[in-house]
Length: 365
Image (cartoon, rainbow, N blue to C red; front, side):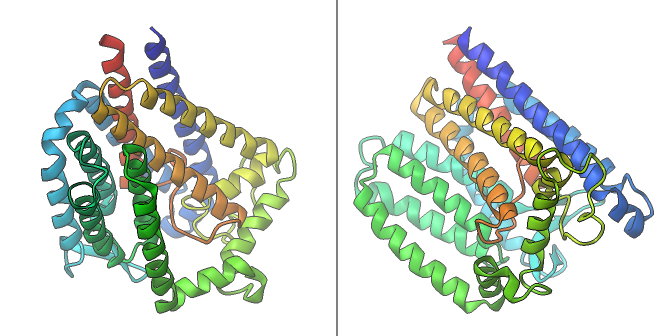
């Protein structure tokens, strides 16, 4: 009975975040959509279609026994690798602003890296469950996962997508640590990854500009620091109670990506400190419910699967809010359930469907 309550509350919390997203996406994108597409409901209608698709997949994963996902752990990972390779092929993958990350369909853009994230979490959860007595060893426990993670990360970096690479790496490392891998092994890999991250940043001018903008956005207020400055202006303009729903000024072509990566800033401007704190509290409550699912998972696979999903959603929410507030460098990660987005939004909903499935399995055991 307790887990049934957790399932209901988890689903209702996700639904609340989605409803907030629907309202804020229309508010943040209406004028921009009217100017560019001559339809103020352009992004809202597309987002509603994403909700419909996400709802169908969520229901399917709620009814599909999560334990059967273990059969598809390796095939799904192989498919994700093939998709990551295919998206780099000119004519198949869609290039936007120098990044080739999407397969473009009529009304839906599919981002294979989102599928790769889910596939990687399922694979690592299955691996830890199978290698319970070998996970502490380098040869049979740590090395295989690190090799797979490294290969997938290289493909995602080739798009390029550093934010997704960092997020999936952080989640996998946490899963391995909880799974029993000695911290000294992970520390060594973490230091090596830190060096690689440094080289990746200094090797690309646009990444260096992001770091410089993060440290001192006013050094280039009309260039690399523009987005962060406009985001902070939006948050500061809202005060305690906000300017009122629909009355944001920063969405009037000042703040780029207002309905996607920086929707939290529009929430702060229109709903004020009260609105932003409210959203943060809802996310904390969502995470708390997710951790209850983790703690009560009926088996080892379900435990690490739900742990990976909760950590991924939490990481994205924390990073997105941190970037909007200017306390983290720009990463390009959406705010789960609230930001406008196709495949990222759908896979976030699928993640909740799997969590509800794990909770349901505990309820009936």
